[in-house]
Image (cartoon, rainbow, N blue to C red; front, side):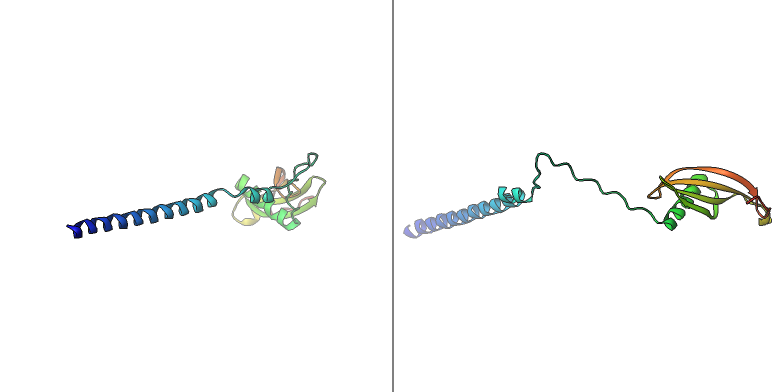
Length: 149
């Protein structure tokens, strides 16, 4: 009988030790998880920017000016997308106060032989970054027919 009471007390002691270890492990993991979730107040004050009451918000960075070749290519591409007509080439490019003016030659009507195609000259206006502001057709003419250039 002494042996059976002794084994039951050993089992109780072992189960107590195991439950104590589980509880301490759980507390440690909870502390670690809590520290990962919210930063301490010290680190939060170090990372926040300091502004005086009279300071203004930082200015937004503007896009850089586009180069002439980029503007010409983008204008021709957007004109093709809008009109659906094949671009023959860029025939003029001029910087203005507000951006760029690009002249683009377009095939309006394809014919056989190619020398009888109907072409058109479009003027495309862009801003300083090369974004399309507007376009208009200046004139239509037959390919190969001398004009009043």
